[in-house]
Length: 250
Image (cartoon, rainbow, N blue to C red; front, side, top):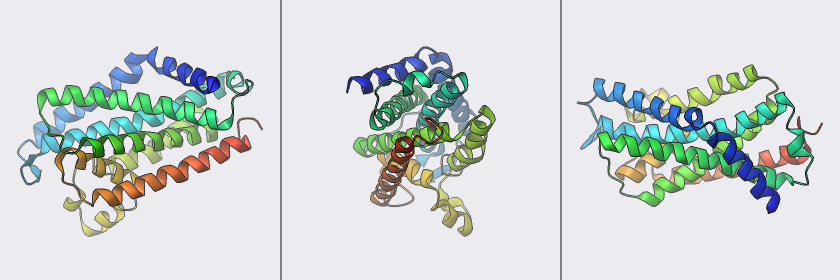
């Protein structure tokens, strides 16, 4: 337990020391999205009685949670591998389970802090209801845990910064932007509606949005089941990678 707490504390300090880059910058980016899209589509209603600006806010909050949770564990591991200081994490008697929990938990904290920051600033401009807070919190925790685990996988796999950039630019960003952050999938043509159901990010964002409005594109229980299953499967796969020492110890 001491090993886990020490590594967890080190990961918290790592992003907190550069909070202008890791916390403030993504909050400002999300607010710029809100400013631009809400200005252009302010008269549009996505759900009955839900103006576009209010609809957009939960999507931007969840997008910030997911992207920053992934960025935390992936950037920490790739930087440690390239600079060579990963040895100081691997040499102490830290089990692979403690290693996994520390990186994922720190990623969840960063994702939740950024998401909370986006939400607090956004609702100052446009109030949004929070009809089912437990659902919103559950999806935020599960989504950040899933992305923290995915960041560990990316950090283990990547050997150079451009490989990590490829992971982010060709996988994380497209899946996030095509997951309904800026629109309801019911506004898409039938083919793209069907394709959206194969995107796990869609269920995280749609379920999180249900927590605010009580409305969603698919039943929230189905989204919760899929996200939970994906999170468990990815966590088990990541633990197996860490246990084998793939690209870390060998």
